[in-house]
Length: 333
Image (tube, rainbow, N blue to C red; front, side, top):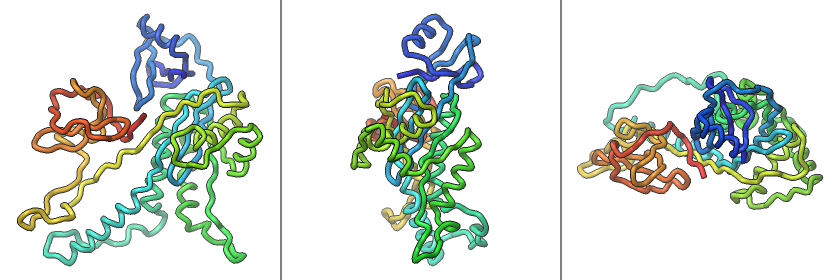
């Protein structure tokens, strides 16, 4: 494992070994900090050199799981497996149903607006799926001097009964075009077809499991590693198979009211991303429960959740017993 390094202006430099990072912190030349599950160091002095090697990030998209691999010619720095964002479509349909139902009840509601979807507009589910990829890419860009993103290009079926279709209006095709455009604002983007990834992986003799939901390197990270290694070169076998597992927190956005009646026929307020003035998902350290993130609240007390599983570990925490660390929008393990 290697430790990401940034200078005093938060500009990423080449990662270093844990032993060297420890010596630099002990001598006061660097300060350690966590960046959403990854330990980094920040230099307190001017670095002795700023030579950078090419670093590529391989991205293997998927419908349920996705893989990322950060690699240079000499080392594999980080492997990441994530859960894809797939819950937005159902929530948008629920919101649409509730809005329509409110218009038939004697309750305040906003007037119908003109169609704001005229022109270029990504479906919310597609925007959320590609926005998740971009957030991870931006997060990696802040820790590593990334030269290029190498993405396995996914394609919709564009031929039906001998005629071309589905190219201009497919959410997958439109979404990836928007995603690639945004990704190019961070670094160079190279695309590789799925059969090319398969051929390289077969030539190297790397196995890939059939269980796409398995938390294994051979599920998705192996393809991401193949993409990055093909761009920078250097290895015939993975030199680092350790993984960081990320799971996006599904925040319950603010609703007008609850879907079900409470006692007395009153619908209580529901949703929201603020708990007692604190942002939900924010990382904190509790005096008793240690590292956790902030959940909901009730009766003036906070709910705390485990950072790796999301399980509730406390429901009566006081704000004065917390030391706030950083804003956060995903779980990591």
